[in-house]
Structures are given as C-alpha cells and as structure tokens.
Image (cartoon, rainbow, N blue to C red; front, side, top):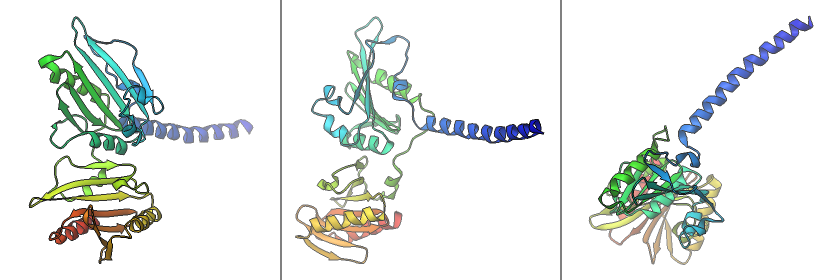
Length: 302
C-alpha cells in the first residue's frame, strides 16, 4: 500500500515539475532574446585580438574613464561599462569598443538621444546608429555602444560597421523604439529630434520620465512632450507641483486642460490623462490653434 501511495506521489511530482522546468526554460530563452550579458557582447574576431583584458567600470568608477562626461550617464541610471581595445594583426590599426549597460531600453534610448544630433549620418544598425569620422555609435536593447577606430584611414567606416554588425549578431531579438514615441503626431516632426529625459524634465526635479519631440510647421518650431507617471496619483502630483511652480504666470483652463502664458516657452498647452501628462510648448502668438491641435492629438493617441 505504501509503495502504491509512493508511486502516486512520485507521478504527481513529475507531472508538476516537468512543466514547471519547461516553462522556466522558455522564460529564460525569451529573456536571452531580449538582452545578453555585457561580457558576451565583446566580439571574438579573426585577425583581431584584445590588447589587454577588458576593463569594467561601474557608477562609482565611471569618472575614471570619462571624467567630465560621467554625470550625464549617471543621470540615466548607468549600470556598467565594459571597454575592449582590439588590434588588427600585423598593423597599427586598432578599434576601441565601449558598451554601456543602462539598465533598461528606455534609459539606453535616453542617453543615445542626448548625444545624437539631427544632422548626423544615420545608419541601420541595432535600433539606429550614426557614424562620424573615426567613430560609430548605436543603440541595441539596453546597451549604448560606441566604437572608435584609430589609424584606420580610409577603411575606418568598413571596420567600424564590421565590429558593430558582429556585436548585433549576439542578439536574437529585433528591437523597436520606445512604444510611447508612437503617441506623437508625425505631421511636421523634425526627424531624429525625439528624446527621453529620465530626471529633471524641463528643468524641474519633480518631473521625471519625459519624452519630448520637436516640430516645424510653416517655419514655426515647437515641441510636444509626454511625461509618464508611475500611476495616476504620481501624475496628478506632478501636475499640481508644475502649476504651483507657474503660479506667477497667466494660467487659464481650457476644455482639455490648461494654457500657461510663459516668458520662456510662450504658450504652454498642458493636460493630464490617466498616468500621463501631455503638453505642447513654444507656441507663439498667432499659432494658438496649432497648440490646441497637437494637444488634442496627444490625448487621442495615448
């Protein structure tokens, strides 16, 4: 009888344990498609070898590598940097690989968007990359990758793209831009002006997780923004603090939210929907309809 009961218990344990293990394995595989450990991203290439062991830097030591520029990375909750210097055999050509782990895809986009310019030469690499003389930067998952080529002469672009492609092969997943960028209207948008600012959005310490995009219509330039609150309470708290900070300005309510006449941003159109704050700034006199139109567009799209 005991043997029979033992067999039943064992069978039940197997029936539960095997699906559980299978599910865990599938979850781990799915996660691996999303990201790769930073050490595994350094490429292993024929005819190229690491000059020295790769160097690692963390938040408390980042300034040792990029003194003077570390603060902007730390403002996006930087996690780790790995640096590898490669030398091509039988030559003086070298390529330095810098891979910044920013913790998540949103923060990686933030630091990438902070360093790119609208007139850069963009290439299809990772989510997006841009190439300059002797350097190539690109965005991939939660990583911001920077490549520098030395003594490469006319082959600089070839070598940089080769290294970038080898790093991208380490991933299985195709990435996309942050989904909240889809909320912004495409009409009049200035290409590659999209930015994400994690902290001190619009210069206020209480505003966080803000996306901002630049537009041009009939030679009139303005910006649209979206701020993502943790929840509706957080969004309301940010709205209340912002209105309090602007209490000396001319504020009046409209159907969708507020209009603030600001000495720096001209007319500001502002609204809250759920856990989001939505706004349009730099709307000059005579273009009020544009502000109302783009605020409505944001509210309809979110």
